[in-house]
Amino acid sequence: MSDYTGIQGQAVVNVSSDPSVSVAAQVWYNNATYAFKITNYFPGGAWATGGNLATARHYLAGAGIQTAGLAFGGTTAPGNQTEEYDGSTWTAGGNLGTGRQRLGGAGTQTAGLAFGGLVPPVSNSTEEYDGSTWTVGGILGTARERLAGAGTQTAALAFGGFLPPETGATEEYDGTSWTAGGSLTTARSFLGGAGIQTAGLAFGGTGPGIPTTGATEEYNGSTWTAGGSLNTSRRGLAGAGTQTAGLAFGGGPPNTVVTEKYDGTSWTTTGSMNSARRALGGAGTQTSGLAFGGTPSPTGATEEFNVPGFTTKTLTVT
Image 1 (cartoon, rainbow, N blue to C red):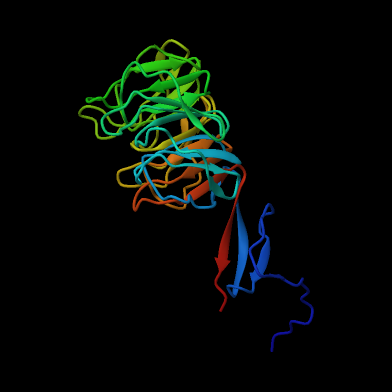
Image 2: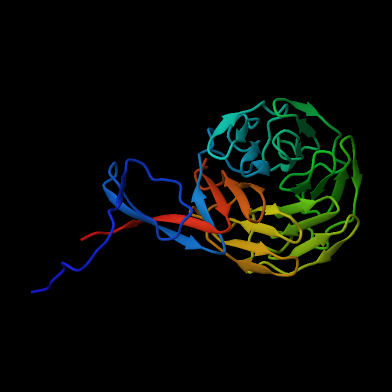
């Protein structure tokens, strides 16, 4: 007969809700769900569930950071809804003056920028957000939808999109008006964007005769040049971060959970999203990203990417 008298251990913490975790292999018992749980640790980063958007939608735009995010526009009528994220909960902000989908976004939660999109028709409208209200800004030189954006409210970048057909047109915003910049080498729409006006990053998308692409281009304030291609070609993806520390996530078809990090030269696959989707919004940085909305459904699901990353796993006990 086995003798267990020499085995010593510690009591498992008994809680009614899962705690915030920042230690690998932390174990507890959730007495509300009757489950033992443990944390998994991912040094390259991992996605965790955040608070849902109040209005589920796709083809929306985003701006800001993980703890101060901004979501606006999208497919759910009337398409002018704006929401602000505080790191856990989305709350209503001021409505866009022009409801639209497939638009571009840039800036921060208190200094956001929305431009282009589909009303219908295709729009050249720009609006500026001050944390509570959207006001009309300078119009784009080229009206378009399915475009990408980067930068700030007073130094923004708009690139790519669909007129029709797909375009490589790039424009720079100074807080008042848009002026033409250098065109993308690969004309495309439904692409991802990141960075600033003088160091932009464009990746993925679709173009004439190209269902999906992994092509990446870097902008220096006047010219786009080729960078390292995504490992997974896709369109309808979202982006965050900078030209030398970018983050690309989601996309399709089919809808994917793939997440990749860019170091200024090449993309590396990292922790997968919990929910496969495309046509989503994105914000934040490479080490602190934010994903929200998208399709299928549409959805209001929100996820937060952190490096290092911790996720919770339910243990099967027999």
